[in-house]
Length: 111
Length: 123
Image (tube, rainbow over all chains, first blue to last red; front, top):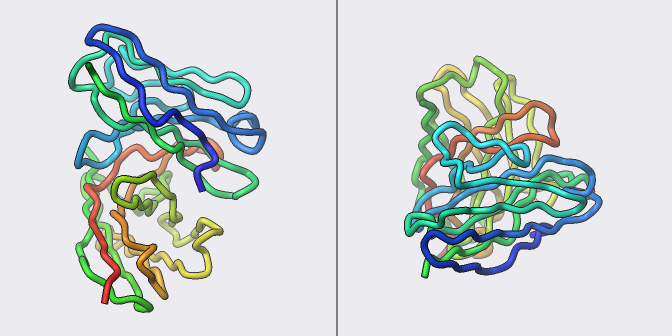
């Protein structure tokens, strides 16, 4: 039921900037519904990283930023660090499915 | 700091009912303003939202699972529960409880999560 598509993996060297895309449709992101992002470290529960497209919860470093345009959203990680190795998921609401939906997930590797 | 903790049933036989409870601490379900969710993840795979319940017992289920899902809330013990009937191997997953917030239905996100509990469906 993954109607939000993400690249399976992205990688970068320490200090570099990486971006993760989240592509949806007119029934979710394109309908102006908010996009949220989660970080899932190995063996742990997801953690809210970005909410309402571009807001960071307290305690999340400003190296993480979000944006949205049309039917897509993006998560950017600048100054990549080893501790950023994790799976990242986008999430929104889909009016056709009448359900909250998650992206397919992206594994970030720090080279 | 809000914390959520799932119960741990572990193993469920095919065709039986999966039952889970989530205990909330650091905040009260009865205070309102939030929605209490169940989300699952097949190990190594993506996340699937199952549904939510609020403090008054109003529910909203994922249509793909609606026919098999029942959620309930026990505000006196600050807990909420999930029942999933007629389980098959496809229901084997890590089940998370999570607090949902964010106002309107289309803006909600999951800001606090339990650690998750692995439920295996096998005879």
